[in-house]
Amino acid sequence: MTETETSVRDDRAGARPAEAGWAGYLSERPLLVLGAVLALLVVVTVAIEPGYLSVRGVRNTLLLAAPVGILAAAQTVLMLTRGIDISVAMVATLAGYVVGSQAGTGLAYSIVVGLLVGALIGAVNGVGVGVFRVHPLIMTLAMSAILLGLLSQWAPTIFRGVTAVPPFLRTVGGGSFAGHLIPYNALVWAAVAVVVILGLRRSGLGRMIYAVGDNPTAARLAGVREWQVLLVVYAISGLLAAVAGVLIAGQVGSVDLRLAEEFLLPSVAAAVIGGTSLFGGVGSYSGTIFGALILGVLNTMLTFLNATQAMKQVVFGVIVLGLAWAYAAAQRRTG
Image 1 (cartoon, rainbow, N blue to C red):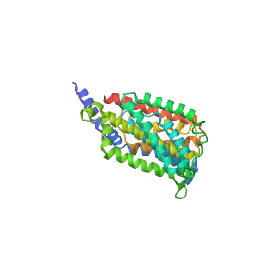
Image 2 (image 1 turned 60 degrees about the vertical axis):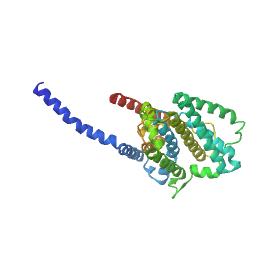
Image 3 (image 1 turned 120 degrees about the vertical axis):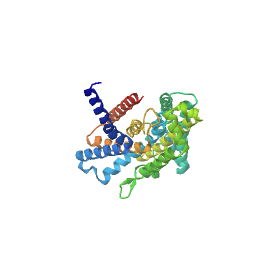
Image 4 (image 1 turned 90 degrees about the vertical axis):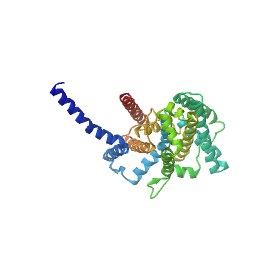
């Protein structure tokens, strides 16, 4: 080896620690990066609409981000196990119908029934994925189609006239307090966030979720019953989707077949933006919270730019595809 080659090699070796240092610093602190992206979007939105940083602007962003954040909690726990739930939008819609149909028997009873229906549907998904080994995408896509068909049949019969939402749910879903700054649905989101974050970090189930997503074979050899973990996480996904559905129904003030349709793609995007890997085992709900807030600000910015809902869906889809490509490229480099 010549002196020049040795010098170049030493220069490259010396450059790697600095590059790795910055990359490592940022990779170990993803919330800093997400916080910077959120702040940048806020600045851009304020430049477009100077009145955005007002009580009304902040409230509207939180109002939109809360149901997305709750649905994204479902996607986060599933993506950590290498799964996904395409049926969350239809589960949320069904929960809204159930709560409306049972409201005459008592508000608390109707809410409990709606949540139980969501958890039951999620458990069926879990049986399909965990026991019968159906691919999560196929299982939940089929469940979504089944629920759409059933609701289309039931809407003019069993759920006929069930469109109005009780006043209490309209307050929780769309009302606010603290000088109209903080929506009530943000409180529900905060409660969900605490449970999910602590559950993933400190519970045995949380450790098994990461283990199954990181290396299913090693998890099985360690005594983890993968099908049981998947059954539980899909049931949790259904429960969270039902919670979001009740809030969305309250926010809209009525129920229809397209109640939660536009929330499906943002729920996936929020988890992906937050750093949850589509390949399992990597991610946290803390990042997903930032992802939901980023989408909330982005949605508001696009509204100020007079973008249609269809164009917003295009933007969210591009974000998911771009980040999915980036994760796949990163996995190939490390693999």
